[in-house]
Image (tube, rainbow, N blue to C red; front, top):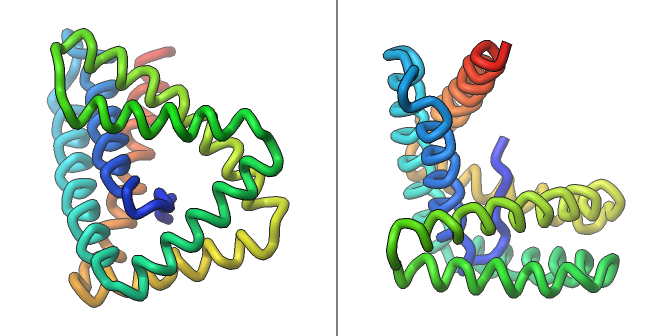
Amino acid sequence: MFKILFRIRNIKLLGIIIILFSVSLSAQDTTNQNGEKEKIIKEYQEISGRLMDLQKQALSDLEIAKQAEVFSQNLEAEMVRQDSSIKQKLNRRDEIVDSYEKGGDEVEMLKLQQEFQGITQQLMIHQQKVMENNNEIREEGKNLEEALFEKMKELDPEVPKLVARLETLGNQIRGLEEDRKL
């Protein structure tokens, strides 16, 4: 289901990740892109945007926001406890977000996007390991995810269908990419 970005400040990161995913998808095959792939990517972007808006609204609930902040702090503390080099990556990620928000020329933005993707991937791998090995953190994350999902469903009862459709579209995009590589 959702991979929540666990800091309130980092809700912006979800939008950047969606933008990065979209940019990388469209940049990979701009000359030979067929109509089917373009439609799938467009729908993926539309649903992602809608879910991102709903997630932002859900995180404006004070109880969920507090739960997310506590979880974020606990998760990051455990990540750093297990690997002290993670602190530098977390700090750099935040710097990139700040720089990205300020804007700049296209080349600089592309460099930031690429660096952000690399750091995010590294952090997500480490985060996954922490979640797998720490039952307390995993349970806390599961509870947050459920609370956030329920709040999003309150805001829009279509959320389960949107999430399922987004997963289907993501699989279709990956399938098209695999077919293109063959």
